[in-house]
Length: 375
Image 1 (tube, rainbow, N blue to C red):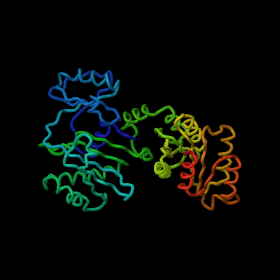
Image 2 (cartoon, one colour):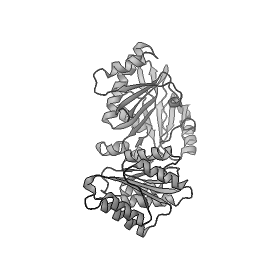
Image 3 (tube, rainbow, N blue to C red):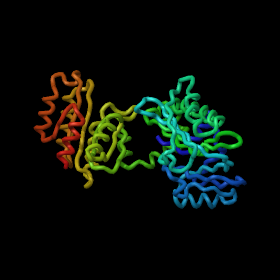
Image 4 (spheres, helix red, strand yellow):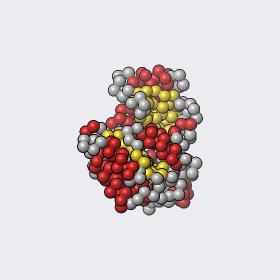
């Protein structure tokens, strides 16, 4: 889940990270008289707010006009009104999960600002959260770009943020800009993303605004999928992909891309969801497959102990009620415990008898077969 800037800063403040003083104004709230200069920011989940006119620096007397201008673009979105900060220098600092190395990675640039991620000036440091010398490891890299004393302060902050990211189950914690001021380091903007699967471990009331915006951004099909117990993300693509689990889904998306195909959807499990959502996933994929740009449907599943025969029976029963609107390609990897009394050869024979292209075990073989057939 993406957090609004206001919710993200509330989280950081709770952990003792300095942020500018501010207040959230919802639609209909009276406009206060803050005096001095203020920064007015629309609380939306999309990036590029400054380019869209959703971030404005104005005198307090012009706050009402700034709210009206932002509302003309973003509708009834709340706005965060913060005291303008005297910034001596802007830095960029972020923590993200490095799935390849199975650790956190700190990203740093001596220059904060728009589109810093693509500017090619990022330093990268692997951070082991519980290591006693994590700040020293960060400092050894940062001191090449900024004065040693400032590097030490940023390194200590980076080590703290790594612990916060772990404890709060954040896949991304980005501060841009991290402002150097006379009073110290200040998180002037914050982008935080929390792992959806970990949501039950945290206070839902603390991020109600973010949750409401996230829900409002869902398509009708994505919202229905959540009610059915799984996560669905619609994307522009030509293959309706049915899978279970984020890791498997990402693998299949990468394989499709390697063969000139794009997944039109991504599916994942939801914490506390029903044990089997196969029929609901197929229903959603078949609906996506009715679109003209979608060429086919690819179904790939893995079975550890659940009987393979049940999965095949369920798939064939579903197809008897709802024939596939586009060519369907099926693959599966089944452990020995899942194939007792009904082996892979029997499953493949049943599927092929029903006119379904079935290739088991190897997802690469399945994707190659689908790409060749659809070409």
